[in-house]
Image (spheres, rainbow, N blue to C red):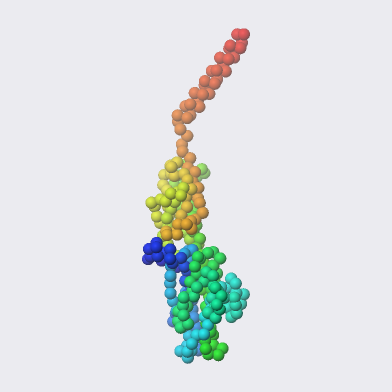
Length: 263
């Protein structure tokens, strides 16, 4: 979930975090009042905005003793046993993971310095003071780290790109972001055009170069490069010089042949 338009660049530098949470929905309780449901799969950029939801349990429970988050990348079970990315009963450092929730209703987990290795399924588990009363949300919430991709569609012309041809370059991500905004670059110079599609009608040789795109405010995470090599028309003057050169060469050969025969 990306809400970059709602915060200043200074705030974004402090919020290079991703928050995984549980989303409370009606109609998801079990028969005895236990149950959680997760938000939809999360698409995150490396450095994302903050969201916040809650978890719940029956009123008969007076206290939550232990809260845990597990990544199914490193937990081969069902999050019933370790390992955990966060365990409130453990004093060990959790690396990129920080729990900023509580033991009542907030289960916010911050992931700093989000990387592709953080992709995967996460599950939240809590253990109460009631004997054998504990709950794990199964299946969990899925995190996918966005990859910016660029592609080209040729609108006119075929074969080698030449002046007058038209192309569209399209920027996209591999998962669903909320209202993504893109920026474009040519040879590392930022272009004034914005939007997911860069339209290049009636190409000229000046359009030759390396193009890539990125999400606005996340320019260091750019797409791969697409190179355009636009060929210009063969200059008429060049043809004239070639013809003159051939004629002069033939004249020179003829003159040398005549001189040689007279000897």
